[in-house]
Length: 203
Image (tube, rainbow, N blue to C red; front, side):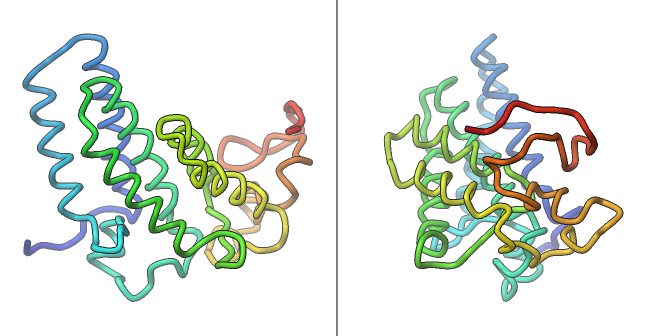
């Protein structure tokens, strides 16, 4: 279709968050018109997915040559919210079209990232949570393995291919939970607040 990308680069994630909310609403109180609208949006999402499974409209429309070059650009963050929406929608409606889209996207991730492949530190940690949920939904252990691998990438000096890491007034690598190993984090850092607020140690 003709047309340009509008808004900020991570806008896809907001569509997925809305779909997840729709799923919870449908589970609580069925609404055939709302489900029909959601199905239409899901069809559009599926049609935007590229042949290799990649899905993020900003890069598809604006910078196709720059996919996976900027850890700040929320590619896996958007993917994580897609996964959560897909699981919620399947639970609410029994429909798995969006889940199929999510699995294809994660299979794309798995061809690029992981042991003996490319390093990656996602600017936001959403993807690890979502992959764990996807493993619980599908029993596909590759998804859990990728979640653990992504967690273990943090705090090893592998990030920095993105603007956030260089914004010292934002906290630098700490903003992305990338200043120390996840298992050693004891204070809240990042977008939700920085300082001396204690949290339970990751074990």
